[in-house]
Image (tube, rainbow, N blue to C red; front, side, top):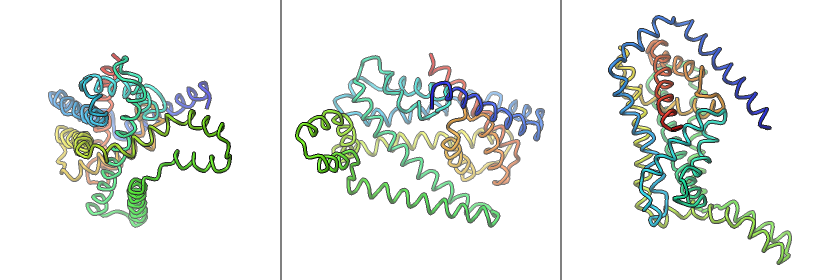
Length: 322
């Protein structure tokens, strides 16, 4: 996709999201939404304070993915790079597809791009694993917590089975250390048995081979770090659950921890599926409204939750851009 087409796609996505946003607000009523947001009041600083655990959790996980000798730079540069990259992801149409690669560029020369990239790859894999487990838990909780229509129930069962298969595949790949680049090199070398070509191939793919081996071997070499990395990812997810619970509580709803967990878990899926929509305008509101209605809350509660996320996102994006 060319740069011009990318901007056009972003503009169309944003426009479609705004249409959805206006539609859902008009359907519920501007006054009701405004009244619910107003009830958050003094609670907004509290919610923002809780939200600090989200970037801090993922930054800590990333920090622990560096080689021990590299950690002398301290935690702050990692957190700063995380915030800056997240801000970049918000203001572009590619979302996490921009945020994740770009974070390696925000260290100001403190660490090499290669070291930051290797650590970022390990952290991204850890985050993907933790998010998959969160989503699986959320789908299982949704299946058991509500009386769903038969069609939706069948779809949910299929999604649960698919998620279990994906997690099993990930476990097999890592247990067998199925290194893609290394296998690719071996196949190409057998097809073209020429020493000069082999040297050229090794030179071109040397960086990728090192990155792949770092990802596969990191936790084998540093098993204690696995605990700290997953703790950071867990803090990120639990902070999201706490935010959902407190937001609903402040707006007059009576949520359970299970409901907050389901809303946060399924929101992770919405973020992934609609990563191309800037700031998830519209899709977050519609998705949250539907989930809130399914769980026995009002659609207004779901939309209010999504609007709070926008306000929180604006605050952290401003900090990240600075």
